[in-house]
Image 1 (tube, rainbow, N blue to C red):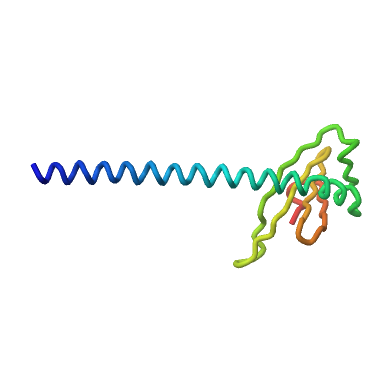
Image 2 (image 1 turned 60 degrees about the vertical axis):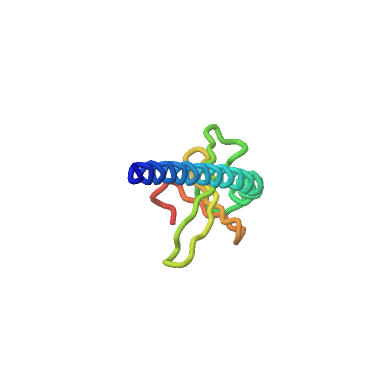
Length: 115
C-alpha cells in the first residue's frame, strides 16, 4: 500500500511539474511575441525609409509597390558567436534587409542574391 501511494504521489508531482513547465513556456512565448511585435513596429518606418534610399540597380518602392510584404524580424548568424538582427521587407519581388543596429539597408532582387 505504501508503494502505491509513493507511485501515485510521484505521478502527481510529475504531472504538476509538466503543467508548470508548459505554462512557463506559454508565458515566455507570449512575452517574446509581444517584444518582437513592439520591435517590428518601432523599426518599420525606419526600415522603409532606409530601403527606399538604399542605392541599387533594382529600386525598392514600398509606397508605390503593388505587392508588398513584411517578412519581419529575424536573426542572421554571422559566425559562431555573433547573431545580427535583420528586418526584412519585400516590395514587388525586391528584398530589402535592414539592420537596425547599423541602420543600414541591403537590397537584393531575390532570396539567392541576399547575404
